[in-house]
Image 1 (tube, protein in one colour):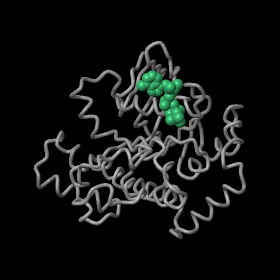
Image 2: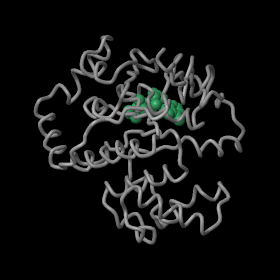
Image 3: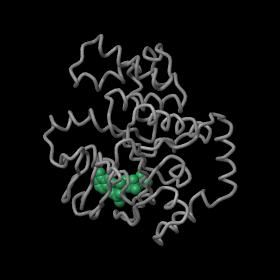
Length: 278
Ligand SMILES: Nc1ncnc2c1ncn2[C@@H]1O[C@H](COP(=O)(O)OP(=O)(O)OP(=O)(O)O)[C@@H](O)[C@H]1O
């Protein structure tokens, strides 16, 4: 009998409304431990709302979100803070998401205050997180404006991993970066997954990127998941007419954009480009 891994995250029948506007309709999706699940769809389809819902930042009107078998849709503020040990987020804009008035060390240790660690333990965790994202320990003393876009996104990733989460919601984490920096950050995310076994919900409108990094892909149209399956298949020969339209409109279908992307990947010469298997 093949071994069946229970999902880390399981979303069932999820409805989310902002006042009278219903944004998510009966969404169902699961993420296994160590897996990367892509979530694609046009602007306004509800991708970020689903990401926010997992972090307790959007109003659930029906359905269930189970993390490690436990329903997290209606947690108290205290329980919600404790969930940050398990689920973290990396946002799109590395320029807007880091407080320019705080040092990198302060930014990284901020979330640890809630975990009640001593100052020495916090310093150790900051140094460890910086090392994991391949930034020097001295980075802790500097302010975000001393770093490039790619380095800032590594700092944002360090802030996410410092709580040692089991799932990171990556909400368009590289779309504000140039192609070469995108390739470097994506490679870094793949490596991080290989090292730590963290799972990703990878939100993107870029099918080429999602094909490269995600094991399974869900396609969202106007708040509904219309297709969910193997990443290679959904991003190359999708079943649903909406997924096919998305594929045709994406740079994956544009040979010039693909050639540029390939050149950026090759420029990195990192080798070992395979997706880690969960
Ligand atoms: N806080 C909010 N209050 C009211 N409506 C909202 C709020 N946040 C999002 N919406 C609406 O919900 C719908 C889905 O938005 P969402 O940001 O989830 O889409 P998306 O697929 O992530 O889009 P994009 O790719 O542009 O980020 C949109 O119609 C948006 O206007």
